[in-house]
Image (tube, rainbow, N blue to C red):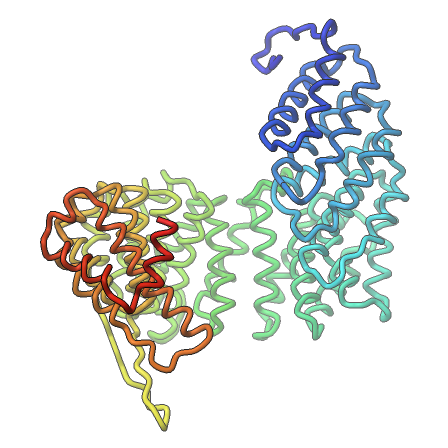
Length: 600
């Protein structure tokens, strides 16, 4: 049936009615696999027969049956059902009655689901837009129904409804579109509006402005700017975030109008509004990154944005620096050459001092922001070929004296190993592993006097946890980069570390037992002491959640002992065999042992 290769369409007319009817009936089955296959098959049939003479009753039958699967209980099936509905609507212009009777109620129910997201949400927006474009539904009626949907105080529901309202608005004619924008402005100017309705209006304005150039509508941009900036002073965080979202999205369609305002406000901003303005920039950049910006070319505005982002790399507020890093990371995905060159310069002390006349503390913040920016760029799938030449410079941040910069650099490496191992495989031996081996074992404990008692803080703990996480991901993604002679002593030491690190080590050991049994057996003797220490851990006066956590910790150690005992050759080691036997006979752990035996 699939004729996507350009071949002539297959004539299914002799069997079409019976085939479609049978497949449509399968959509009532409980089996997820059957429904998924039926949906995919129907989608191919409908698209392959587009333009051919077909019975409109078949299309109506499909819409009737498929509507029962447009629910938030299974978003993948929901997505496939919506794509099939869209294919039917594109193939037939005579299904208006079926759309209103069967499809529309399901669409409206789904529109305010807190679970709706990703592909299912995108498909819903496409179907709603098509329903308006094809005049299958009356725009005013659909708009009112969406606006009257219950959203409560759920930000996710408000965001989804805003996207739905925007989707039908941009698909409507100019007069209806202008009417919606006018109503939004009136609601934003109204003093009687509650905070949740305000959030909805702000978000709708942004989602519409992403597609429609609002600067072409007389007087609209000035009023919206006033609404956005006045909302920044709202006591509601939801309204503030919605205003930043709206401003950023509206800037996509009317860049020349809104972007200069954002950049100008950033130069004069106080700490309170700086985060929100940068969040607006993040929305603008992200729309370009995901290809939701139409034909606008962001490379034309990169040079306007970069100076402000660079300026705030050393902001004293961590939240502001994180948003800056997200902006730079996303920007690196769409304008790699300019942004990566800038980040490379900021990654060195000399360049930092030239770019920002500040003290060493600010330089440290800048380098930490650079590492975080690269982490976001890697996670955002920045071009490997363009990023690779800069990685050597960025990896030098692992050798910084400041622990904050080192931790940010470790998270950057973790992002690379997890999302794009090609970036670091060739650099592991010389640039990553030496630092990783050092950081995975270092401790820096200090005592804090809290009056009646003293608290011990280990400043290196976040770095050890990050380093162990990198080793764990390397074992999964690129095991050849691991030198087991160096790694196994680190793993042994981690088994005797603090609880969080021990649990990480337990997961690594479990994974290695099936993949690297020889290396595990060779290190068994070293595992015995730290595991015994965990088993002997006294619960003291722990109660409630604290006691449960401690018990799970011990149970995790017992689970590891069971797993290790099943590795081929492990029980041939007398010392380990004796340890396992003692553990099995220990009266202290009998209840836990029975529980584990039942599930293992």
